[in-house]
Image 1 (cartoon, rainbow, N blue to C red):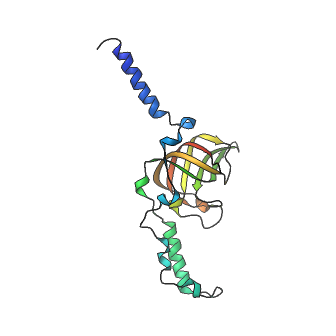
Image 2: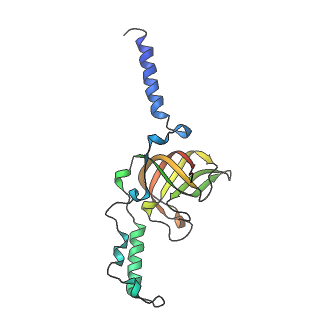
Image 3: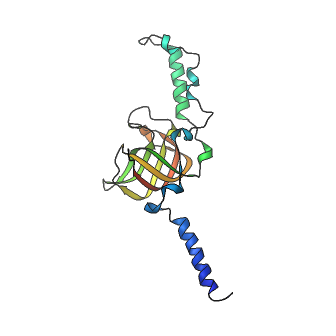
Length: 185
């Protein structure tokens, strides 16, 4: 191999490597991620409302205890708690908008770990969303400028991985965060 070919080949390989790794941190570009909506995280076959099929809730008195309604509600909450994730999305590089529910702060100003949820107030009010509507996000580098319940775009690789955050709910997904930015209305 000629002497000038080796440096050129090395340079070309470095360019390919740098191109493939340049999506970490602030250099990630929005068009290198698939934009995903929250309903895409729910498997088509999942229907937690099937527990209420056959019950005419409108005809029941509001102030009376009804064991059929109680049983249906318990079945609904059990289905809600074990909500399945959409395996088809695992491993994809996505961008998704949602609201931040902080789990871990550094120096009281830098976000290290949070839950991304589809609506304002989720995980703070009970019950939390089903697991297939919560993404557990961890950052390599703490984020500045994002606070509790801020709307944000997050970019990263999503995987199916269950994580229990206690009273804030169980997430059905985790994300290795590449980038986060405030959502612009």
